Image (cartoon, rainbow, N blue to C red):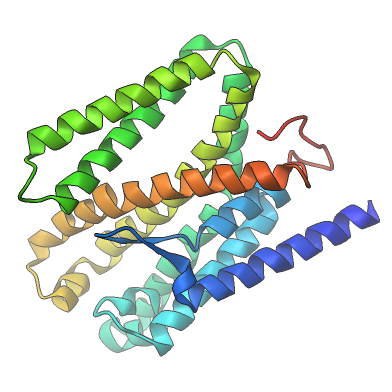
Length: 281
């Protein structure tokens, strides 16, 4: 028991160090031609899966703290104030402090909580005899991949490919994934897909809560900072969610699955109160 606690303490410190390094260096981003996909949340997701939601929430807090520091000390974008209570105070007064603290910390803390419970849910569905549940799980993954491929192609080739072509290519890729998941579902190892869904859930949690928080709390100030009309803010936010959010979610799913499977050979995933999982997912 003592060795286990020491191991978890070391792993928590390791994930914390990785978050800090990623946050203050270019290592926290993957260049994908038309977007720099954020991957700083990935150590938080992995921490939730291997150390539990409590330590995951702590890692999420660290993620939020690095965001606050970065946007306060090195405010390189006009919208940096939404993550910085100091800058927000100058624009919105005392209320801006609490608004920015919410956007900075709440979504990031949830990134360290939601993936664990999504992993538990998907693992139980896939390993059980609920065929309808398996089909729904596979369909969700296929739709997400379709949306990601379509958005990526439309942004990468805005003139060469029209929306119809991008949609068709996305449908083909999504259908291929659905077929692969259906065939793979006959194998016990298919339970590993729960790791992929944990990655998706963590990335989407960050994107959805941050962007919805900006719209609800800072719509007018955000529009002013970007130099657009207030009515255009919703379109901008939906664009970020539909493109950046989906692409980053897919990237997170791939990395969390790969790293998670490798790390699971050394340490079992967290399953609550000292219990160990029997497999990687």
